[in-house]
Length: 457
Image (tube, rainbow, N blue to C red; front, top):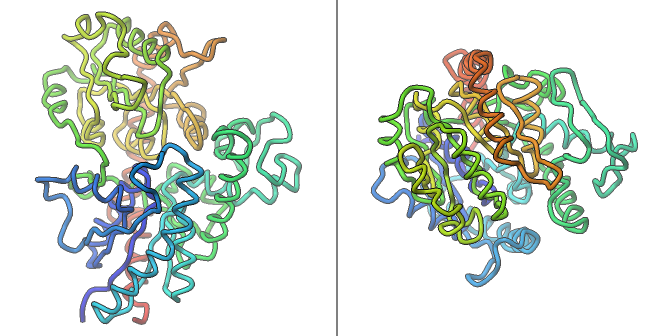
């Protein structure tokens, strides 16, 4: 009897592909065969980043479907991108699954979809397939999303998701208290775009609740309060390659692994790591202020500067900056982040606080300097600074800029107080205990795999 076959489909974004591909590697280790479905645009980039590397096992088959965007379309137009995906990808996914069934003569045991790809769950329901949802953000974001009807009923937000007034809300003890101005569906474009995104998210929430399994890239140990609100949500995180002693895959940009050799030459706990994910864009004056802040810290730093992080990134540095910091600073276009954060030379992590970066930093006992920009990053920052107390938030001045002195002062505070590192190391142990044999996340994945193997074909 052949191994059960599952189809895995991430939301077509960098921060979603990596953890879903990591979950696929875990499932393959447990004897499942995986068809991993990227958009054609992302599939090409993933293959290019994997060139010459044997990071994907034979049990995982990487395939692609169109996302509806033409080569000349503007992929920074989020509304157009989402609308095209919703128009094109469901039909293409259905056709792919039918092709798999026809070719292999077997039924797919389960479709595993990203929590932000509710349309894929609808396809599975239509095709009468078992379905599982994987939320790659925190359990707190799920709790907040599931609380939307009550937030509307209580007059906290209106039916479009817009806050009625500025206030702090806390859904449960040990959960982050958040400002209504920082709800993760606000701050994305204008009000029309926010309503579109809010409606899209509510639809995803309904699809998530209809799934046979609801899984989350988190742990009871990190988010007990949030998980207590949603008993059907099962923790399977943190989904990190280091947990299986493997290599992370799914990047859209080639990694600059030479930075690891540079880190080997630095002293322990001496390097500030600066990275803001795959979407963050900085105005040029903010980019320069960050550069000057790193310079006056007078510490070693590794800074990920994507080509599109600001206008003309190569020419955006302050005059003479690169020459002045050459002996202690490295700027690279993309890093093998999980390996960087594991490196003993890293002292702290200046981050946008996306959930992947948050769990990667926490799992390596690294204190944070938090620079959130949008979506769930504000809630994650509240976890880091107020609940777990393993970092500090960088504050903007009256002009909306995080200034060089603010950067230097917060770096000095985090690195000058050993309590941040001590708490970070304790939190690391809590997070990693969940994925060890007998841990809550380890058990949840094993139970999920057993369920798939026992479902009738």
